[in-house]
Length: 258
Ligand SMILES: C[S@@+](CC[C@H](N)C(=O)[O-])C[C@H]1O[C@@H](n2cnc3c(N)ncnc32)[C@H](O)[C@@H]1O
Image (cartoon, rainbow, N blue to C red):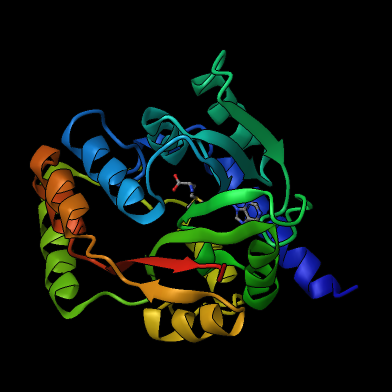
């Protein structure tokens, strides 16, 4: 057993567990009902097709993407390896018989072969410790023709516009103060984890697409994320509108061959 890898996973789990109670307060995490929920739902509908389908949601966190899936009428299994995150998600969706929450590692789901129509994850891939292993497992549990839908981004580098936006936020915060819940929270711990990850210097589509292909997926598409960003900006204050410009985010859709 690779103990360094074990320690890294433990550190990742502990980091997210510590953030579980305030995670939804950080901009970009909660998906507000209305235009933003509609934009996320449209992206999911476009990628996986009409409900009801058997969907496996990886790294469900506080259950925000779970809510998108349930609003569409899917039958959802949502997993996370942080019990603290799952507690928040379970409380949010208490009494909903369409969702089952499980404590599991997204890189080794232990779910049966060919048992899901779709696999969805938001903001998980950048923090995988064994991306090849994870993709092989997701391929295994998808039915032939099943879809993989990844929402993620390069959180290691600001885009050129993001650099300007970040300076503007810093200037703004001299007057309005810092936001204790934004992703800079626990930033030293975050940086320590980041440098030990395979995608520690940033997750890009250029790195991810070849890995997805090597795992056996086909029909890889990169739909526009713009409708989601536009919907987020509509509801956000100036600081959060600027934050939507910080990083290069993407959506990746792929299929297991029939
Ligand atoms: C940035 S949060 C995203 C949560 C949720 N997907 C969302 O977008 O709101 C990352 C989540 O991934 C979970 N996570 C990270 N690595 C994991 C793994 N190997 N297995 C299961 N969950 C994992 C963490 O516990 C945390 O809940």
